[in-house]
Image 1 (cartoon, one colour):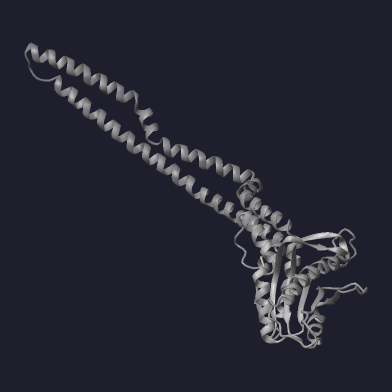
Image 2: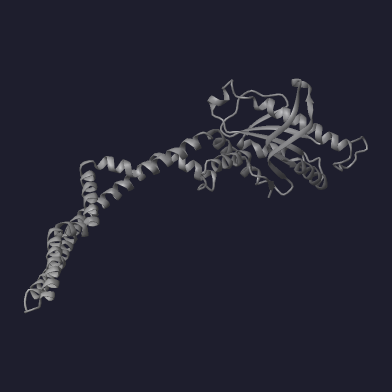
Length: 357
């Protein structure tokens, strides 16, 4: 089985994008795509779940309100009874002070005690309603809230449901918006995954490096486009007995194929080929790659350019670049005769991995 290094680039970009926006529940590309596919159904389920929650809340309120009313009435009767018992006890004490023969000092002391008791009785009698109301105030407030909520749900059920599910719906919408921002990466990752699965079926003579990125300092001058190459990136780099294959994957629709505003993958891969060829050629000429010598001279590392289109490809042929469908990929790679020995492939792989950023 083919040995594989690195995660595909589009998948890495998707993961970083989601993490930046605190979206961490997805563990695979399939889960992300399933989220997009099931968005409407998920939205409906949230609303349905909250309809059920509001219905349950209404049913509970219809039970709680009568029970709370009973508790309030029971509490009122109990507190009023306790207060009247206290008053009756004070009245009995007052009667006791009014009986018996006493001297002037006892009568004077009794006068002030009776006056105090009468005042206390009067205050307690006048405060019965207040103290009873105060004793059930927290229950009455709760009853008022429950009555208001019950009436609100009964008269405006739909609005109550929307209020209940507003937060999860808003979060669902946020996730969809953030995921939709990277649709191009999602389709790209899907295509790259399919290519990787195809290449993984190759034997262990093949080594696959995904998302190869390399920077150059000083920059490499690219005469064909009269520009300097500071860095390169390629979706897949396959080291094989037949040489090195640069593979750029495009999961494009027919509309994208005909879009003049999209950057040409042909020019992109040719630019990458030039930089990688120059790098490996310099290494080979300096014997850093340790390639076996041929009596004619220094061996060249063959580098072939492939663009793999998942769905369809253009009819045109392009110079120095082979455009294939996914089904054609493995057959094309195996078509070429081997030119690199096992130890040479290992040295090329190690050198490329050391440059990979």
